[in-house]
Amino acid sequence: MPKLKSNSGAKKRFRITKNGKVMSAKGFKSHLLEKKSPKRKASLRGTAVLSDVEAAKVKAMLPYG
Image 1 (cartoon, rainbow, N blue to C red):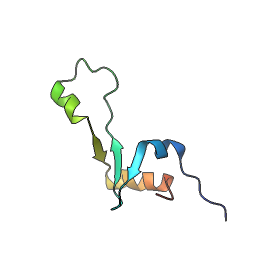
Image 2: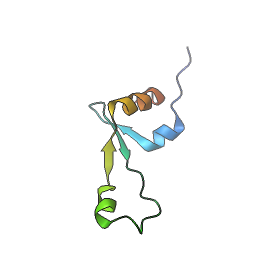
Image 3: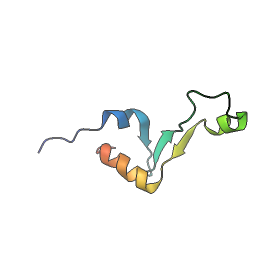
């Protein structure tokens, strides 16, 4: 049986931790930033943990972690 292919887009956007959580960068911070408050923009920095439902979909796209 051939090897499964990882989804190239998912490889670039998500990271799986040792404990199996899926991390991703937060969205809504590339443009239209003038109307967003500094507090809101600061909260969009860093990474976020995906919910269990979303994490399951990402893990299906990344068969080898």
